[in-house]
Image (tube, rainbow, N blue to C red; front, side):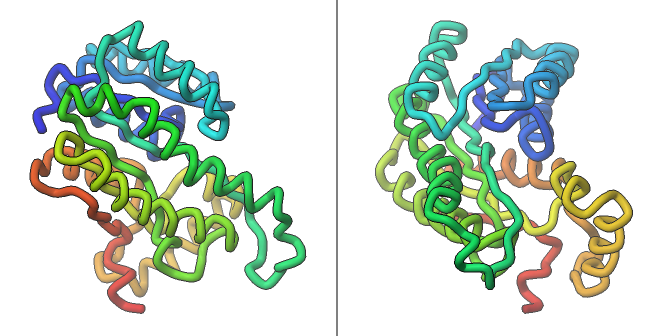
Length: 254
């Protein structure tokens, strides 16, 4: 897929992996990038400024992917502005930290909210943009997690949601083929603001240093490394229904 003159939608595009992906798409030649956000309005506006500086037509649009009405309205606004969508990157997600042993603490409502955003959210976006993606013979990339493969991560709900997203990727690859390719990226530890908010700058730096000692590539992934894989998958014209793990090789040492 040649990204030159394409229009891309990146959910959760105001920070971290979403921001890095939006900028990478612009550098690769996308003429339009839509930065979706639910809470980070200032961050999304800052990314739009960066994209504009790269010569890209950019817009920031608020929509909670956990609300189907907002998703459908969002999709219509994108159509009005650009008239097409070639790329959809489902990056928006939610989580919280809870011990896996604390089963009573994981309420039905909390579990449902994580599934609603992390699984139904990407499905809603895929459904809303399916016609556009088919017309463009476009591609979709879902941002999953190593937690979808391993019993780890911030909570049971998060791991289950990312495992479901991996399966959704495979099902959508069948449902949207042959016109649309659907793949996923499954990052391990990524140096993002979320990590430092949880662990503190010093705490995360120590955790990352300790992890690097057992990782084959001896490096910690940054958002830009995940964006590299996203763009790589977009460029693979005969690959669909696949997921690429990006964790410096840690998963092969378990």
